[in-house]
Image (cartoon, rainbow, N blue to C red; front, side, top):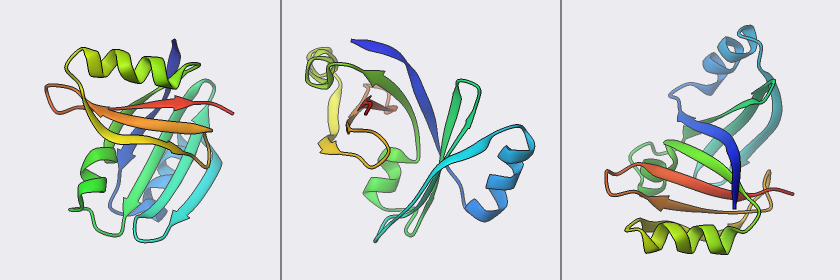
Length: 122
């Protein structure tokens, strides 16, 4: 079952320029990662709000299109929630995989082309 909005994913052109903007607004870095062939990611948090900034090596890639701007929901039953969305006309965009910051995740695409990440927390 989905329990909360976990974070918003936002694609940026220059992560080095954008992180200080968020920090100035009260966010602090809680996780950073560099993914080979994908790009850099910084997770920031302020209170209960989390923002995941992505700077992609290739912003025109299929993966960048899927995770560039997304909403992530925390779930305690990833398989059941994934099946729920698939059963309501959503398409599987990224199958269940192990995460770095979260335990596991999957992405779906809604009929309007919006991407939703379902993430199982550690």
